[in-house]
Image 1 (cartoon, rainbow, N blue to C red):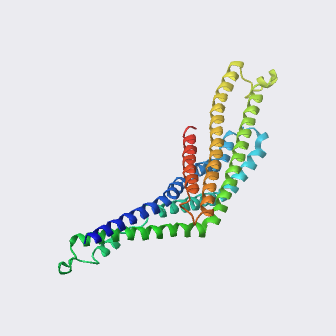
Image 2: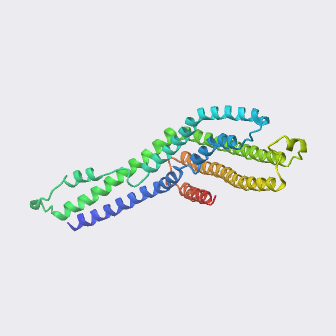
Image 3: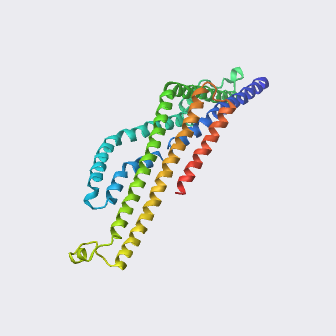
Length: 303
């Protein structure tokens, strides 16, 4: 009996060590995938891009000289409206994949309570044969750990299967998202330049040296110097706020691209090393990527 007790303890300890190792192998995968599931700032920047034409239209001077620009921006707005669903679906599929991977690699991915109950009842004490309650408990303990170990192995297998099956497509999708984030930056910079030019056009009009004849004719631009300066000062304050908001939007797009690059690099390493999830270098890289993603989020909160 002492031998059985010693043996069961050793097996139990070994099983525990194996379970811990199996979970540790996936811990970095879980943390990285969970951190990646939000794909930092991408959705917010997408919404800002979709609102860009409205921002430009709101800032367009009423002068007929800007009518062609207004027509072009309205046409672009209609085209962007048709892109909207695809842009959000791109984000939703990518985040869904990473969230699924995080869940699959999580400690609670498999509930063994039912299996454990069945295993526990698999043997009973048989006093006549010297099989007592302690032996039943020892068996249950071993069974629990071995079952957990088996499930942990299955868990790792499922993670591998998901990455192997969908990994290449996910890499292509992340590449597309990076390209889109770059395009957002271009569009937001164009918006910034357009609104700056509108402000310049306004100030030129307000500073125009109008003739007495125009003033007598009731031209709306025939205002006093004090009034003109007050209007310009008010307009510049509003422009300063817009410049700040636009600059923040551009930085957010840059951070979105940075976050996507980090996710893509980490995911690519997972794909390359999918059969070696316990590789120390891979675990170290994923943990660093997780920290980098947190830093990206911290930078965004400062905007």
